[in-house]
Image (cartoon, rainbow, N blue to C red; front, side, top):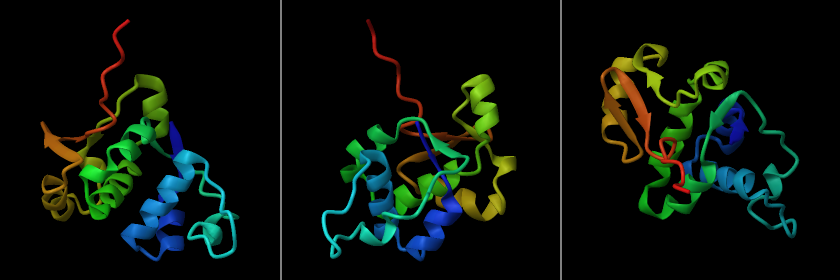
Length: 135
């Protein structure tokens, strides 16, 4: 599970979807910059911990080549509206539309996102609903 602060990621990246992806990659892989010219150097001393969460960030990163940076950034932004307390209590990874500000505007963007799906007034996150391994 990855805990992050979406507002801080958005602010530090300037809203640039490629920079958001670099930050995600850095957080998931626990990467550190190798030199001052490294693209991660400017983010290496920033604490991005927060109450937003992704249950399977490794799966998202592994499959990132299938999706646009814009879709990945929207996935992180939309996931940031979920309640960590609710997840801890119920293991629910979906998000009710009523919890999304400007839902009418955003639902159209969610419907075109390859990582998100709206069904029965719930937003489903593609890589959050990964089935458990069979033993």
